[in-house]
Image 1 (cartoon, one colour):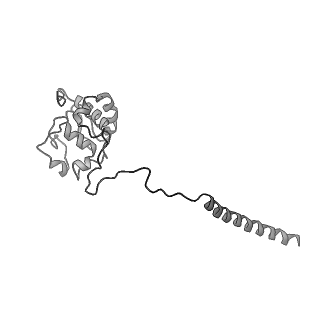
Image 2 (cartoon, one colour):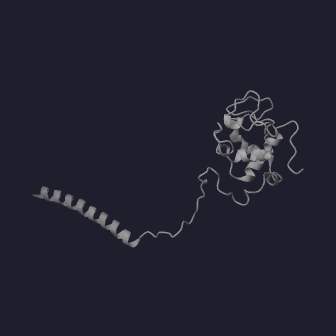
Image 3 (tube, helix red, strand yellow):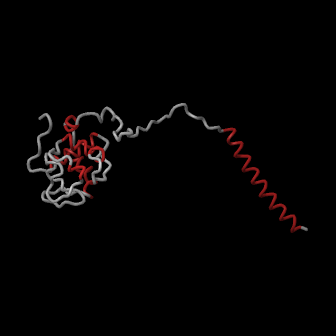
Length: 181
């Protein structure tokens, strides 16, 4: 008889645990009812439906010439290290997945010898990699040249782009003059 009571106690313990668990869930929902906000606390700006980027912050809207005035080529070299996986920076260096970037500032777009460009960049032949073109391309390669082979998402911060462009400017025997000077 003692053995059957032990089984009953075990079943009772399991039932009580289930009732306490379910009851505490109901009780918790009564005590801590969720509060729904009337409007979101954080607004995340997504790209517009036409593929255009949402308006940038005031700091980001500055022209590249203004940002280059306070840019640091040393910081740009550090940021550009991530580009080294696909690009070389040395004079006469090899093309990798992307073209060699020595002398890119002022170079004609899609015309670096020995590199096969995507049709998207090929459509920009006749233009040069001036500061504005580099700024727009580094911001978002896919928006600058839809269909480009470059998979890099881009740099959203204007100061970082200016630093990288200032660094790219130094990769030349005769660096291009800065805008406005």
